Amino acid sequence: MKFDSYKRVIFSVAVLAIAFTVACGKKETKVSEIGQGEGEVSIVAWPGYIERGETDKGYDWVTEFEKSSGCKVNVKTAATSDEMVALMNEGGFDLVTASGDASLRLVAGGKVQEINTDLVPSWKNVDSRLQNAPWHTVEGKHFGVPYQWGPNVLMYNTKVFKKAPTSWNVVFEEQVLPDGKSNKGRVQAFDGPIYIADAALYLKQAKPELGIQDPYELDEKQYTAVIELLKKQRQLVPKYWHDAMVQVDDFKKEGLVASSTWPFQVNLLVSEKQPVASVVPQEGATGWADSTMLHKDSKHVNCAYKWLEHSLSPKVQGDLASWFGSVPSVPSACKGNALLGDTGCAVNGFNNFEKISFWRTPKEDCSGGRKCIPYKKWAEDYISIIGSK
Image (cartoon, rainbow, N blue to C red; front, side, top):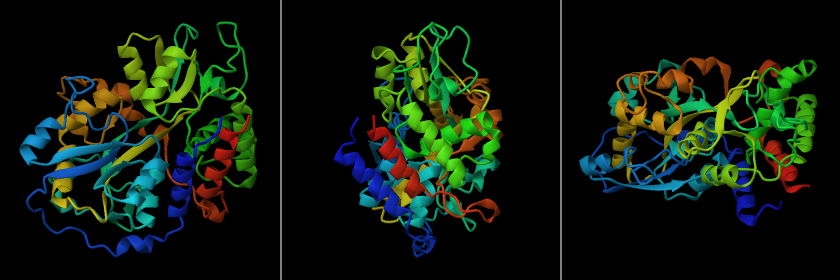
């Protein structure tokens, strides 16, 4: 498999962004008041995050917003955090639903501005576990409004696995699966450097002698072991995924039986009567806690702030959680939502917050005064691994 030039640009721009200092982002003054809407707002978002009923009429949190605010919503979907960083670097967008492995890069690169939470009345309803989360809060200043969160689950074919697999080893180690066939050529992995953390999380339990405590803080010895595992996995993986809809299609047509994925793909496949289910294996899971961030050069700040408030509506939060299989950032959304149901938050992992290793950008300086492998190296090595075979 060869990487095209577009993807190489995405990675190179993302890597450069991390070199900026946080001071760059402090030059901007946060908005002090909201005026009349400018007529539109442009959002970079994960697939499935901004729905207007086009896929399913029951899921639409855009149409009513446009009517009430007078702000037309334009959406640009992005398949990876690196793509989001690249798009925000290019400019021309107002908001982005950034995960933790992108958010601090955007702050450090001076691409997003501080959020005035006083202008977002529903901020007070945000889950206390998220309000001051380190992936959007820098020195007490908020650069994002929490949107949704959840785990990266293991999706599996229920015809092959009569019982749910208990370990991530089904995608990392060559083996014979319950149907008597090898997993080689039948598993997928995420096309993004942050997936290195998934391999580290697996080795944390599989090889405790490595002493891995945090999958985003890997010293040279730990990192080398993780990279070797990923090189071996490369022989098992026929195709890496980064587009959610393409992965859905792959599972229907390519004979795949196991992969890391988002609950979104699982829900779509189940709705289409495909034989899949998902599980969080014994090693735990990585995950994402996404925040809506405002570009420093936004031309539609008023509409952007109107959207930020709208995004925290319990109805929006509950509908989105039902659609994506995620967890609302507003706990009150967990009750009384017809689509999510009163058990939906529990099913989607509301009580598993402490068990998830949330995405964040690896840095050279890590806990205990240790030197760890930074994201730049992660990106370079993962490109090399996927491009080999």
